[in-house]
Image 1 (cartoon, rainbow, N blue to C red):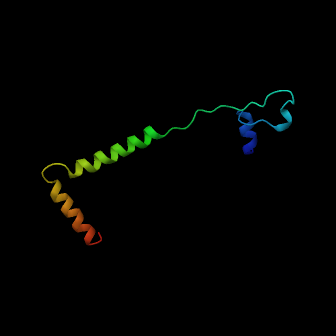
Image 2: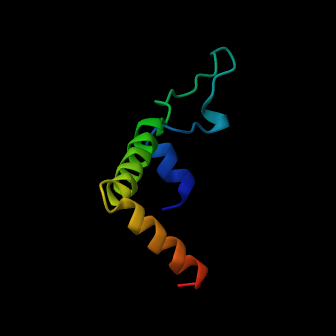
Amino acid sequence: MSGYCALKEKGMVVHFNDCAADKRFETSTFKPVNVTEDIASKLVDRFNKVAKRYAGPIGWAVRKFDKFKKSLNF
């Protein structure tokens, strides 16, 4: 099945010949895509993961070790 046929079956497209001259051309409405909550959630999760790693009394040692590894290109 072609992409056009699949879209027509879902009511997402109308063939031009199916439009009446005296009728207003109606278009389908779609719920807008909003991924803001998903992105914010992933950012918070990532921040918490990194913050947990560097928190606490040994956090400074972990940071220093990571810096040392980077300097050696590990």
